[in-house]
Amino acid sequence: MIDLIFNLSRCIPRRSLQATILFVSVSTQLPATENERPNVIIILADDMGFSDAGCYGSEIETPNLDQLAHDGLKFTNFYNTARCWPTRASLLTGFYAQQVHRDSFDGRGGGNKGVRPAWAPLLPVRLKDAGYRSYHSGKWHLDSDPMSTGFDQSYQLLDDNRHFRPARHNLNGKALPAETPESTYYATTAMTDYLLRFLSEHERDHAEQPFFGYLAFIAPHFPLQARQETIDKYAKHYSVGWDQVRAARLAKQHELGMNATSVLPDYEPEIGPPYDFPDAISQLGPGEVNRELPWEQLTPTQKNSQASKMAIHAAMVDSIDEEVGRVVDWLKQNKQFDNTLLLFLSDNGASAEIMIRGDGHDPKAAPGSSASYLCLGPGWSRAANTPFRRHKTWVHEGGISTPLIAHWPKGFSADGKRDKPAHVASIVPTILDLAGLPTKPDASDSGPSAFSGQSLASVMTGNVQPEAEASIWWLHENNKALRKGNFKVVKAADEEWQLYDLSADRIEAQDLLLEQPERLKQMVSEWEKLRVQYQKDAQIPRP
Image 1 (cartoon, rainbow, N blue to C red):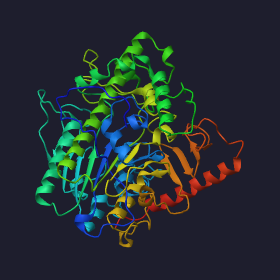
Image 2: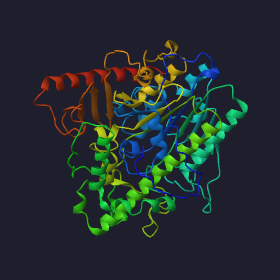
Image 3: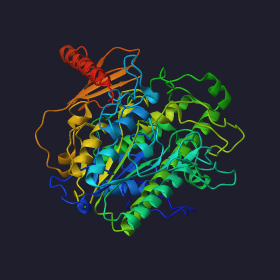
Image 4: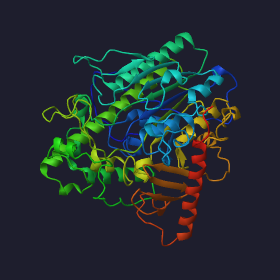
């Protein structure tokens, strides 16, 4: 995933050119014994845009992700839920978040405070039947806690307002001291440190068992904060503006054979942050821009401020890649690389949000330092989501499209990209498939008889079997969508339903409502039918 490589000397561990990203897939000949089953590592970024890795079009240096994509698989039509906590619920249960009370649903509760029913255990619980031990490091943003949901060890960062010196974090359920002002702690590195510590202890004490690792970064989620030496690497790169960056990313995506669009969608100046915080805009000063606008319309002050913000975002993505390289290095050194499934993805599209939380924002502090609190905003979010429209929280392609890289030398060969549409709910049944476990929930769970996602094992190994095209369904903050085959209906909360043919119009520019009204009617009807079914699932008593 990288196209442009910069030379850099770092004070953090040296980057490997082969990193492993996690996950998902399965050979059709599943392992028979515990020590033959693949290890699995999921690496989840937070608010990383579809095009932010080099192998998806970016100019940001991501050699480890790029190498994993080159030697493994790259999915081009993979989807999340448009928001952090619903994606995490879907990723680890195999159900839509609404089914398991982790996204608000028809006034019946849920959302980030919702509690999953007992029939929807997390993946580590299901993997125990195949002898796996499970390890978590990073963000949680689920109900309950890692240690009571099947993980054997966990480093949990509870403070997502600080990438430096967190005030709240714990180890295996016990509070750790707050980091001091003198600390060199940086969250992206610390999370990797703990995961590698857990895996090293696993090799020492449980080498006969397979492992599942879940590394959940908070980067590049706001506040935009990164090490200064990494920011400096990109300091002059983004003064060209987001118009040129979008165009360059689109051109690279064409070289990579990734999409069918030849143009970029127009800016939508009416689309700003999904939530309005006028006080934050005021505190951030005259350099802030809270609308999608052509770069030429910005003032010199705004251009300087905005270019600085994107340099920090790029540094955060760069740091993620650095840590992916450390994971790969550990796997190689411990002879686990060939039989480890790595999957890398993001929880939603890049974010247009602008707000100030935590310790507030010091306008005199260096941008990207611990005393600053900056957000990416709509202009750069649009660039990060190239070529798509809109942002995190919307269910247009920009809000729900995630990179997905899958790498497993022992399970499948490097063989390019996969265009089949799929959803994060497919990850659980895929991993269960590869672990030799049933790919349907146990009837004794008292929940739905099937996961909402389908196993991607045959897709990953290239042994694709003919099957009915499954619909993919979305609902978040009253934004609604359904994809069936190449067609998608989508409705923002305050807009009418629209119909797009994504095989020719992935940027959702040509509404087919007038040309194909019957298709739109049928797909909206299917969306509603599925809503009724998922509402019934959400009402299943919690045994």
